Amino acid sequence: MLGALTQGDRRATGSANSLGLGSFDMDNLYGKRALNTMTEQIRYCSRNCNSVDVPDKLYADGLGVIDSLLATALEDTEDSWQEALKPYDDDCESESTWGEFAYHLLTGPCKRLADNRVAAIRDGRNVARYLESLANGSETPESVKPKITDELSAAKEAGINLNVLANIWLFDVGVIDNGTTLRVPKFLNRALGMNLDKQAIMTEYFLKCLEQEVYGARSAGMYDMGIKTISGNRVDFSEKPRSFCFRGLVAKDERVLLYKVKVDSGITFDIALQMYEEAKDNGAVPPTNSGDGWNTRGRSRVITTGFYCDSRNYLRGGKKVFLIINPGSHSASCIVLRPNSGRRLCTKHNLRERIFSSNNLSPMGP
Image 1 (tube, rainbow, N blue to C red):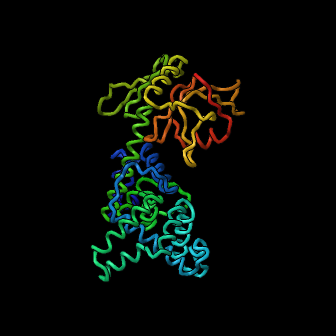
Image 2: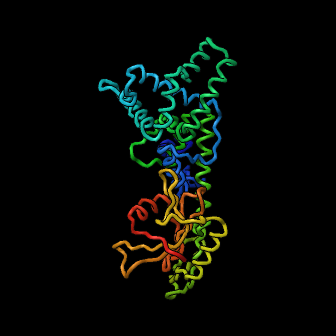
């Protein structure tokens, strides 16, 4: 029944198309992009959680899981708790999978948080034990709550957030990072395995990512409203229309005309300069430039709005000049304007990995 409701398994409905999520405008291009953005933020434990609130109770439960793992590792060895996290060779498949997950999470993107919790556990401040003493009645809520609150504050400063918790929640319902792309129906299907509080939080997280994708597409003029608007500097009919007639019982005398058009979607320098000035007025352009086309914030590259010269080898006819507009941290995409192809939407991930990382992109003044 759950598969039928969410289309996690289309066979559960008895029809592959009757209850598709496409009818609800979620299992589409923007939904897939939103889910990819969300899972990438979760995978790398990004600080960006799209302003989704999480109750302290869920933070305490998640921190209890982490402290329990680290406490067990510290019992095995006092020297290298990282090595103690690794699964043993004789572990069963489920234990081995969980051990690999915990090792890569706590020694990778959550290393700072893990070091903080190791120091706390050695000092006797183990949240897992606090929760256990509360459950068995050895301590009262009045005595335990202040201790847990203090540990939560320290853990939040050390990096615990929704993305860290979501790693554990998704693993618990069988969503494992094995390099494959998570589909929207499967995500919604597996989310039903969480309790209602976690379901609500993960759904809100996904919907906020979806709103950002739609907002970015609308800002770039690329959002598909269902009716395609053909626009450009010039739109002309390239040939006479072709006529198609239908010989059915209904509307047998009606015709459909098919037109072929040529579109000049290029953009002039004056328009590009105007858009750059508007972006500058809106605060999208920083007052100073780092000199290499991007600013460094921690380990991430923040793409700077401006004109760029692309000198990659595959480009013919010399260097190509185009404008990149970064709408801000609320959007996962940038607006890219080229002289011939006009306005396009490009994800920040692609810009960083395919263009900026090649060192063939150099900023230039308008």
